[in-house]
Length: 239
Ligand code: CA
Image (cartoon, rainbow, N blue to C red):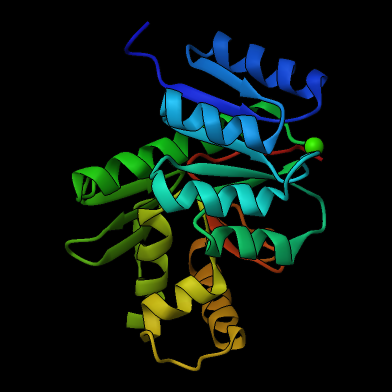
């Protein structure tokens, strides 16, 4: 019991809360639930969860306020649960220290993948290092040390900027990175780069690593927010 990761679910809709709770318990997580912002803040302090799943639409407090309050004294990673189409809200949550977000309604596989990715990322941060010098997903292989990218065993040439962007995404595979975060890390904190230059670079990377750049499988666009490199490939859909 004590070795299980403790996930706190902050969700006012009992049916959703029960569903997520059952899912997590069957995946060997321990669960604590809160149905509003105030009880969440109390329970976080007393339970010290490993991860918090925070619904932004709560009855008593603005979810964003709950997030900001958590961030003032707890380092536990937070995955924000938001409504579809709220891009500005997602960016605000990521800027306020959320580790990731997931959009309602979500699939159980997607939720579990987000939780695993966020926990792994948090552990890497704590250890202060990357697990490996090589990243692989599907046919894509990125060697950070040698700065070599290959697809299905064939080396592909990326410019220095393209490599920086791809490496950044790979090191945080599974998590969304905002346009602003990527630009800051690639071009520096004072860069005034607009998203257009980033988009052009990502399009170039996709031409080099994707089978069909118009339907990318590795680098996914999170509209209005940023990019996410997948941790595992979805099964090919046969049309
Ligand atoms: Ca709600």
